[in-house]
Amino acid sequence: MKLNKNVNQKNSIFKNWLVILVAILFIILPFIINAYWVDVLFFFGVYALLGLSLNIVLGEVGLFDLGHMGFMAIGAYTTAILNTTFGIPVIVLLPISAIAAGAFAWLVCSPIIHLRGDYLCIVTIGMGEIVRLTLNNNPFGITGGPNGVFGIDFPSLGSIFVVDNSTKFYYYIWLIVGLTIIGLVNLQRSRIGRAWNYIREDEIAAESTGIDVRSYKLLAFVLGAGLAGVAGNVYATKLMM
Image (cartoon, rainbow, N blue to C red; front, top):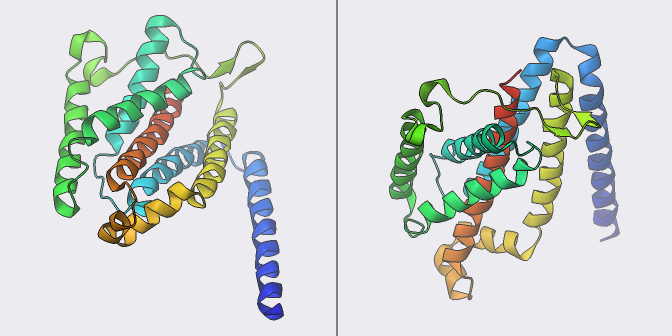
């Protein structure tokens, strides 16, 4: 028993040091690599955030979602349209993009949340294609069609801090990724995370123990879509460089 406790303590210390070393590496990387690789690591961060958002749906609950990029697009276009039309600051639009993507997920997933396996795959593929085609056809003249939307501002806190170069965008996205990982680890250990895991392992057994399977599935889609919307917000602003 004491031996197991010592092993667990050593593993915990090792993990903590590993996290610290990785964090230090990410902090100093922009100073030892050129601008091209800083940009590459920025986009790696965007897709890491997108992967974390998809992991909520696929990894935690075990639901197949092949239209997840549609939620990222909703976040990106929400940012682009509201910033260029109404001048709302991009940082303020971070949570708004998440809410817009999450609301869209709730709207489209509520009728299909009972589907499983291949059937859910097919419907989510269709959903992603509907989003792509709709935005590409420039509805109401607000999405810019194939050309997209131009003139999005950089993320800023007034004149105090402006994310306007590759290095700042690098730190910006990886800060968001780091905070997201911390949040998701805590969520995984919570009652919600445990309920998701029960549903993933045996949906019928989970329902028989009183877990509201439908609500927890829908929550996973909404949270995953919200994070994808945040990724879309950051991605859209970086394209203006």
